[in-house]
Length: 324
Image 1 (cartoon, helix red, strand yellow):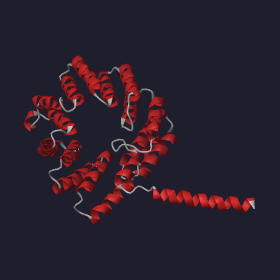
Image 2 (spheres, one colour; image 1 turned 60 degrees about the vertical axis):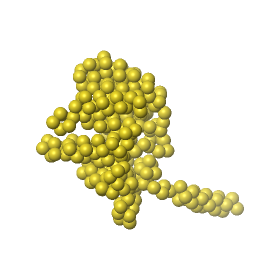
Image 3 (cartoon, one colour; image 1 turned 90 degrees about the vertical axis):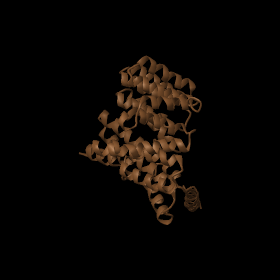
Image 4 (cartoon, helix red, strand yellow; image 1 turned 45 degrees about the vertical axis):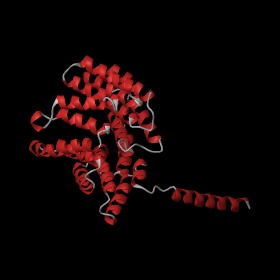
């Protein structure tokens, strides 16, 4: 009897597990993205848009999905559709500015210059529609810092956004001022502003990473690593902090074991933020392993990244490289 009961029990438990799995199947593209299933999310979004062509929210989510994959043309096209459908939604204008901005950054100089009015207009419209959006004001300030005066930029305009942010998000205001000081080569002032942003933030992990990035740019790698450790210790997850901390360590060539541990921690979570999707974390792990000379482990990570996002060309290129 025992030999008959166990197979029957195994069959029943397998059926139960399958039922639970089916019941827990994510119903939305956002949930699929949080699980790292980018290909499935894109298919679901495209199916939805075929059934409901005027779904601005679906176009916005598609914009963000393409954006983090580096598919700038597709991101910009989806963002234009979202804004055309709902021009008075601040967040859609913001993502349009971001997507077209990245498309411009990856275009020829002449083409990029022609795009700048569209980028500036979308950033400014995002702020006009929602003046309390710290993200919109911060991005607009960054545009003003980057763009030359004849294209609508200006440090005074960026500072005005910092002043407006001061009552909404003090940490963001200090970040803008830190960026302005750093660009003016006032490095002591910049460091003070980055630290003020940390002190003012309710989520200081990310602000510690801003300071770490500053130290990296200055070549102060010991201080950078100390700031990365502070970021991780003060992180309030789930967040992009583990992923971004690992990226900083990798870029600086520091503490590869620590970077690997951070990425594994990030991937062990039930969900990943859309700005640090699972396929990107696997790709970064692959880069670290490849740099260490472990081509087999690198190939496994690149293969996983590619399986989650088949249009993520960087993973495919890397996989071909290590497979040679």
